[in-house]
Image (cartoon, rainbow, N blue to C red; front, side, top):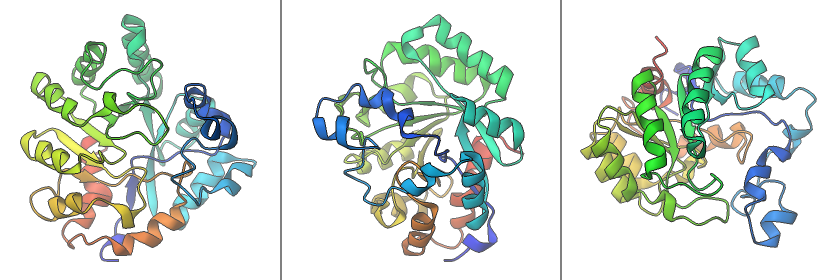
Length: 286
């Protein structure tokens, strides 16, 4: 694949196989028996090759580092919502970048939590899963606005899931059209979509062109399934707006992701931006 072997990759969605119980916050909201009682991973119906063998590894941090080294991933953005993520960031600050969590239901305490995460763990970004909040909170809901304002004050981006959620949860809260109002009200906010924006990918591209601080990451998709509209946009005027995000170990192995990457029709000039430079700029890693 052009450029991949020459570019140390920054993965903006990677994690640790600390156990399937970390998905309990999703599982307790599900109503269909298959997802709730039969799947180890809540979206197993979509991912037929979940790397479950990694979940049996005695040291989840070592397992992730091993896979990163195998496939040229220099650094990974990881959540510090649990002890594993915190240990990883503390022990390997040269490899792991701290990602903070948000809680729109906590209101003032949620903002205080964001500030503590910034102070204690040096987080470089925050994340939000609108369909996964209990109860759900739409992307453009008033409860999200203090979070967006705080991100601006900290000078940090926010990664937000958009499009139909993988877990069998209602989708309305993640409709891509909701991003338009947020970017209108918060033009300084660096907003990065996660998980594809499907089936509203064409709308996502229109919004990416419209709003300078809106970006798209490729999380939760095997590269052969990257939306063609996104690849065409990156090759045209969107080279600085699309960035790589994987999904290891949640649903995809890095072997699957990197093996598929040769199928992605990005132009040579786009690869360094996609795999590294856009993430480095957005996360302010210089």
